[in-house]
Image 1 (spheres, rainbow, N blue to C red):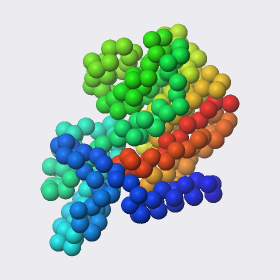
Image 2 (image 1 turned 180 degrees about the horizontal axis):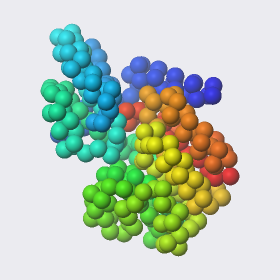
Image 3 (image 1 turned 90 degrees about the vertical axis):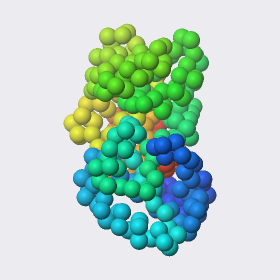
Image 4 (image 1 turned 60 degrees about the vertical axis):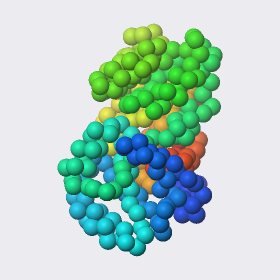
Length: 276
């Protein structure tokens, strides 16, 4: 769509113009500002621990970074999957012999705030989070919860579930696949749901799984209820991301609102559908 291409272009232009600070921290807690380079420029390399393509380029990435270091160009690794934790990143860096290249897995506060912006949880209601992971979005939701608001979080990783339960005992966090959303909601007598927030990496999930999750989402939401997720700016125009948006729009019978969050690393687009 023309407006989508325009939005993508505007985001890239803003980054190139250096209009944002992009403050974040590396996996050891040190402050990073990749959009305010100490030298001539900073190159952000978006990778994943389980991506065979980026892993195959690890030696070449290191060669290029080393070659350009003397020219004032720095490199930083940005792990796209917000659900990976620092120990796994350190293991990946060691396994592929990365050294002296900062790495971050930060999902910024700006993105978390944008994900819940406009959601009024002070009134009695029901909200579900799919894939809370380490709790980046969970924290922003909990801050807004009213005393009579029900909050269900669903994650397939038992370690993440235990951590959420430990940090926020008031949250109903269960270990299950988001494909079981409707059954989980029905079992708890929570339906219909007012809002669903998702951190799931839909573009990398099997298509059959994504279709089942989206079907469940549209089934449990009340008319006028919202579904919010995000996509990274650099992948927004790729076929998997486009296909996901088309599928969700078909389920919700309305196009999403889109908000560009440049102060995240990587920059992201928050998409919110309202069920027709």
